[in-house]
Image 1 (tube, rainbow, N blue to C red):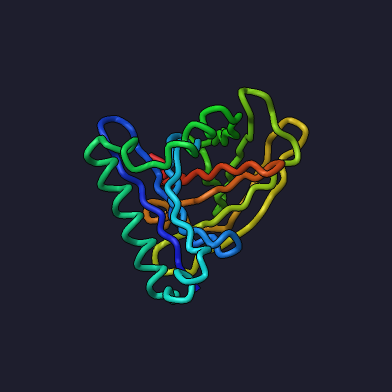
Image 2 (image 1 turned 45 degrees about the horizontal axis):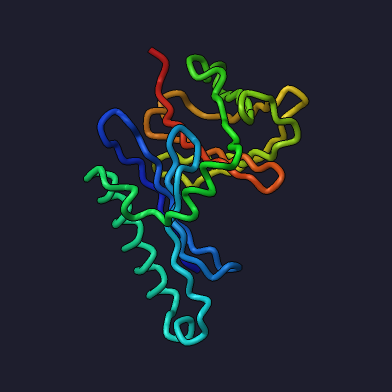
Length: 194
């Protein structure tokens, strides 16, 4: 099994989320770059060629994926992201409508020992009903917790988890929305109420 990589990196005033994974079914090592939850480009290497696949074990694929992830991070830091992304893929992405995930109660998510997140999924400002949301709640010293929800007719969904408010500054929530073959991933940092 090959583990993926997720990194937030800042260039200027923009924060990019870089996500790399091995897509075994497609025989791809893929890195995606997100900005405000929208995928703005990809870089992928295929290992479908049988000669290449035979010579690549999981350790070699993971190292190649790690190197590709670093290459994209360095390109962002140097302001040269367009130089490393797959051009055809980036042009296609620009023409596709994108899903967007909005965190509606970001200022008040913790009460009575529970973390409650209300999210809305939209596409070009229009609510997306029946989108499947997968949540990955990560905190220091504990295994990640996963849960799912489906958006209602207004594109809204809510999750509630029992968690101590003191653990929030060391926690994050990764949300992936899927609808009709389109996917968007957002990472939200949590903080203790002030």
